[in-house]
Image (cartoon, rainbow, N blue to C red; front, top):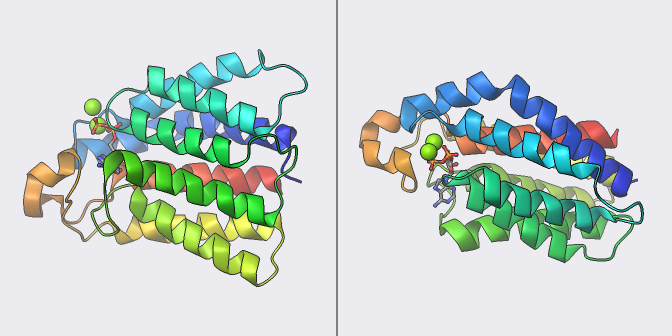
Length: 209
Ligand code: ADP
Ligand code: MG
Ligand code: MG
């Protein structure tokens, strides 16, 4: 079940995954940005990791996500820091006080994260940003929940959709962020933020199993 133990395991795994994929994310961002996305995400999640143990024992998932939000905002920098920070902050608010996330809380959590990114960055679907991983993930999660899927199946559906969503950005021109300055030269490259989003959602599913 999706309780505080899961929330902490997800974030610990995300920190490991961001270290593991640091160079991959740097290379994606080097192609269509300034090459720092892997560095930014790795630094941010390592900072979260060092603060995770300070949470009180009665913390709930929302408290974990609030800590993630404030830490990412203060340590990641660039575009991704405020975007992920707002995502985790809105998601934390959506599940305030809940000790366990059931299917509808999980969908509300993912939806709030995506809405936070859109609120902050004003990107639409197809702009070649992290929104193109999150929106398919939210839609797939909602569809899975409507079919009666359990939490794990909802998270797996979200992760799979985020991975396809990230891949789908490859042939596109970017309309937001640094990659938008490149025009057609962005074609053929996957958006780094969409890729890190897919990695985060994969980690969420992996830690729920
Ligand atoms: P920076 O571009 O400042 O160096 P990062 O490299 O850490 O920041 O993050 C870049 C990622 O941020 C992009 O790949 C894209 O997914 C995301 N991004 C940039 N601008 C926006 C936006 N307005 N809305 C949503 N996502 C965005
Ligand atoms: Mg960058
Ligand atoms: Mg930068």
